[in-house]
Length: 317
Image 1: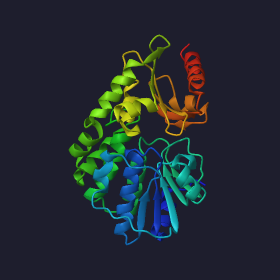
Image 2 (image 1 turned 180 degrees about the horizontal axis):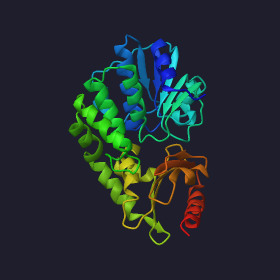
Image 3 (image 1 turned 180 degrees about the vertical axis):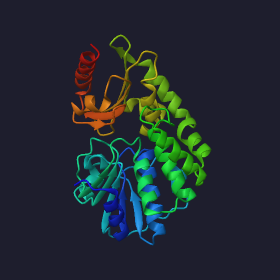
Image 4 (image 1 turned 30 degrees about the vertical axis):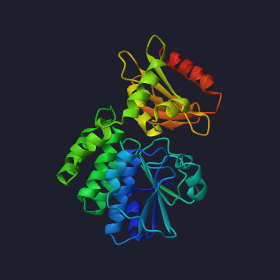
C-alpha cells in the first residue's frame, strides 16, 4: 500500500528497535539513506541497525566511521532504495522479505512488497526522497546525516551528470553542504579514487569489448576468470558499467557481469531514445530510464544479449 509522507513520519515516530535493510550490491544511495535514517532515529532515542547481506565496499567506510550497530530483535523493518524484496539478496530476503513494514524508494518499478510504501518515482535518488521526509519531520541535519544524504544523491546521479538531476537536487545538495557535508572528500572517494586492480580489470574488459548497431550499442563482459586474474572486486565494476555509454555515438552500454554462483547480471546505461528500465523489464528486471538491470541464467547470457540487442535495434529503426 502506498502512503504519504505524513504516514511515514507517524510510522518512524512510533517505531523502535528498527532494522534498516539495504539492497544487494550496495551503492551510495541505499547505504547513504540507511546511515542517514540510522542517525535520525538514534537521535530520537531509538535503537536502530543497518544491515546488508553482502560485504560493504571499502569506499563507503566514511559513512560508517564511529557507528556502532546494536543487536536486538527487530520490531519494525524499513527498506531503503529497494524496489523488490528479491533485491535484498537471498539471505535477507529469506529472513525479512515478507516482513518489511516500510519501504522508502524512488524506483517507479517498485513492486510494493512492503506493508506500506512511500515512493517518488521522479526523484533522482532515494536520498532526495528521504531528505524531504526529514525536512517535514523537523529532523536535525547534522554533518553525519548530510554526508550520508549527499553521498546518496551524488552517487545516484553520477556526480550530478545524469539527466535525472533536477534543480531541486542541486539546491538540496547545496543545503547539505551548508549543513556540513564534506562534498570534496565524498567526491574523491566515490568518483576519483580507484584501486590498481580496477585498471587491470578495465584493460581486460576493453580488450573484449563488442559493438552492435553501428557502434550505438557497446557491450562489456566481465567474467569470474577476470576477477581471479586481476584481483578486482565486483564493486570495481560499477565505474566500468558507467563507462559503457561514454563512447562517441553510443546510445546504450551493456555490462554483463558474471556472478559468483553462476549466471550473469546485465547492467544497462542508456541515452535517449532508449529506456533502460523498459528494456530490462522484458527479462524480469527493472530500474530507471537511464540505468537498469536484469539477470541471465548460467549459459543463457549470450541468448539474452542477442534478444536484448534485437529489441534495441527495433527501437532505433
